[in-house]
Length: 627
Image 1 (cartoon, rainbow, N blue to C red):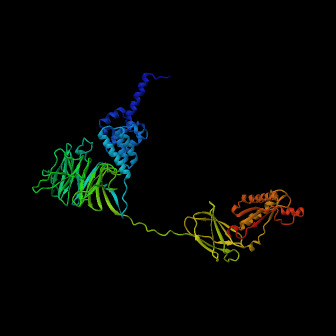
Image 2 (image 1 turned 90 degrees about the vertical axis):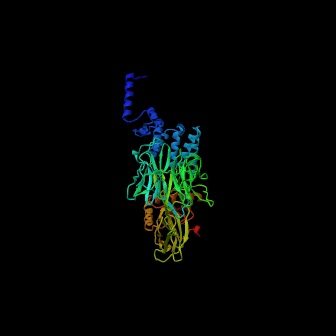
Image 3 (image 1 turned 45 degrees about the horizontal axis):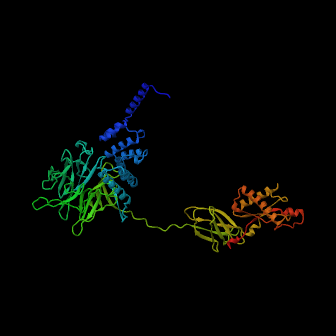
C-alpha cells in the first residue's frame, strides 16, 4: 500500500485549508459555534456553495436566514439539505422551521409531516404545545375553503410605494394622512431579541409625498396604537414593556407625546393597540398584563366622570391561552388578530358580532384573501369595500408588508350562446343529364367500423349535421347507377358541401373493360396480361368514383370445390396487381365464381381457355344490406 510521507500530507491539508479560506467556506465546527452563539448575520455573509456543503451544515445556514427573516433563502437551503437527508435525521428546531416555511407556501401535507416528525423528538411541554399548535394550523389550512363568489371578489394590492425589504405594519389613516410602523431605520439601533431595527412611527401627509419618520422618540420602540377622535395614541416600549402616550394636533404636526397618566397602563405588562367602541365609548386594547389568559388578551375600560378610567376587564369570551391583539371596531363588529389553533398559520384576523345583550358573539375567522398561512394582523377599514391589513404573506416586498384589499365586482358572466351547428350538405345528380338522383348515403370513418347512413330527398338534395372531424369514405347507392365512393375529410368547424355525380348503368355500357386469361390450372399472369390490366388502371383514373369487382373464373375441368379456390386465387392475383399500382382498396372488391359462370360452353380447348379468366365489372345498384 502506498503511503504519503508526513510532510506531503501536511502540505495537502494546508493547501485544502487555504482553498477553503479563499472560497469563504468555514469549517463545520466554526459554523456550529457561530450558529449556537446566535451569530446569524455572520453566517449570512458567508460565500456559501450549497452543493459542496454537508446537509447538517446547510441546516444551520438555512436556520440563520430564517432567524433573519430571509424566508426565501432559508427555504431554498432547507430544500437542498432535505434533498440529501431524511426528515427524521434532523433535529426538531430545524424541522419546525422547515415546516413553518412549507406552511407559508401552502404545502400543508409536508408541513404536517415536518411537525409530526419533530413532535416525536421533543419532551418539554412548551415544545409539545407549540408543535401541536402548528399541526392544528396545517389541518386548518388543509380544510380551509374559499367562500363562494357572490357577484364580487376581494382583490389584494401590495402598497409597494410604501413597503420596503424590511417590515411595515399597523397602518392607520386619520384625516387623510397615513400612519404606520416600520423597522427600516438601522440608526435607531437593533432590538437584541430579533436583531432587527427598533420600531419607528412614520407618516405620509399626502399620496404624493414620501413617508417620513414622525420622530417622537429617538431610541427603543415607538409606534401607533390608534386614534381616539383627534388624539393620537402612541406606544413606547423599552425593557420588554410598553405604555400608551398621547399626542395632540399642533400646527401641521403633532405635539410631543406625554405619558398617559389617566390610562391604566400596567406596571409589568405591555399595551400595544387600542380602539374606541363608538356605541359604548369603551376603550378596547390589547395587553399582556396580569390576569391575561395567555400571551396578549383583549381588555376594556371606560372613562369615569373624574377623567380617570375604570379598572380594565378581560374580554374573557374572546380571549384564549394564545394571543389576541390589534382590536378594531366597525359598528357592531369587533375585528382582532388571534394566533390559536383555529388559525391557518400564525396570526389570523377574526371578527365577533355584538349580540342583543351587548356581549360579543363567538369569534369567526375571516376567509381568504384576508387570511393566509403567514401572519395577518392590524386590520383597518376605511370603507366597506376597502380594507387595509399587515401581512408577511408570500410574494411580499419585505419581511412584513402593508396591503389594501378591495371589493371589486366580478366581470359579467358570458352569456351562453347556442353552439354553432355545422352541416354536411349537397346533392346527387346524373352525371350525363344533370337530373337529380335520390340515393342512399353511407359515411364510413376510416378509423372505425361504425358508419352513418341516410337518404337524400327525392330531388337528390341532403343536409345533415356535420359528423365528427376526421377522414371518411362516402358511399352512394341508387338503383340503375354505378356504386359511388369518394374519400372526404371533415374539419372541426365549418360547413361541408359535397355534390355526388352518379354514373348510370346505361352510361356504363359505353365503357369497354378487358379480360385477363390464364393457363390451365394456373393463377399467375400471362405475358399479355399486364397491358390489359393497365387499361383498367387508366379507366379507374378516368372514373375516380367507380367501384370495380375483380371476378375470377375457371373452366369445368376438376371438382367445383377445387375450382372455387383456383378462381379466388386468380382474382387475388389481379387484385394485388392493381393495389400495388396505387388503386385504393376501397375501390376494389374480389370474388371467385369457380366454374359457375362460363363465358362460352366448355366444349373445346379454346372455349375452356376463354373461360379461364378474370373479369372487371363496375358495381351497380344498392347493396342488399341496405334494403
